[in-house]
Image (cartoon, rainbow over all chains, first blue to last red):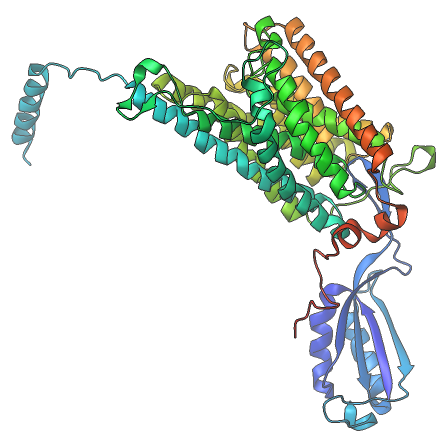
Length: 112
Length: 442
């Protein structure tokens, strides 16, 4: 099993979710985060004083999938989240050691 | 109807009109005037009361989430304490048997000699219900007190702050008020402040300034080499709604200061006051919008809000006498002052979280100085004397109280408490408990 974590631009969430559903993905977790990569922040002014906004709002999508479809999921996410402009984000793939469905106690593949 | 019938009816009506004598013009009776004057105090008074909600939302929106509940609490506490102290001591200290410099030390209770068992007694020459005047004046002292709470936000201790509020509302405000509205020496000299640019707003400003100096800036606000670090507010919709509520309440603040509504002339004056009040606010807001765009290349909403309020404070000393065009200019100048005063106080490392000093202190002084521009009964000399006297007294008295509080009970929370946020450390609450213990319900 793999945990796929994608940091994407906030307005791309609906597109990414729509692209994932044909793949049989049964669930995912979404959180609001802030961050920066090579897209630096910018200088803003509040009441006459300048400050650097380094962190930009992003959305983090986490989805646990069977290893066989992991590569496909990554491709689909990238295609949906891409704008060709700086700040599109990144996708990470991690190994899941164990998974449990809380309600039924099913484990690993049955829990996804 | 046909043309001929129309003219016939018209002709008969005209004949009847010419034929009857004009009805005798009824004077407003003393009792009716009494009722209308009292009504003005009461209605304009509750409009000013609602400014407490305005201050509350404005301040809550400009502090960070971790300090929001504390700010909300201070505002409702101030309003309550002000009312009680003004009953217990303040009103009579300001208005009763003023010898020129001070009134009387006793709780409020006033009679209404005009209201007797036999009916209204016009011979008693009482223009309004005594209680209605108490109510109207009370909401003014409450406004003064709430000015201080914005400036010292995010690092002041709750109870020492309330102690200061007690002294401000029971003693400091009433004494300087007795010099003016209580009929004391400043009024006798010719000082003119219609609704309180100096008496309310600059007083709040001076008290806030003294507090900010004694308290010190928030940790991390000012860096080395004169660096100013912004600490953005957490809820701009609240701040904006608060400003609109204050704007609305100001019609009560300035309109009610006509102190009468018992004649056509009075209500016409009140209409003029509403117009000038509104235009001054508009002048301030638009000016700040344009200036921040020019200076900072982006319009700063929080400064526009300050600009509207600064315009309102500026017109408060003379909302009746200016022409509308002058009212706009007076408000616009207030806006200019706000734009430059905000970074100015930062340069002095005086940390004013909401901009109360530019709005209430600086524009309060400007508004008082502007009175002779439209009111020939006032003079610049008298206005300056008043501004200086009120300023010296209020600032000194406030400074003494803040210093006493500082060396006795302490006025500032510790560095750790300031970092955690006053909601957690002083109140044990979260203003926006999104998730965590208890917030998700059972």
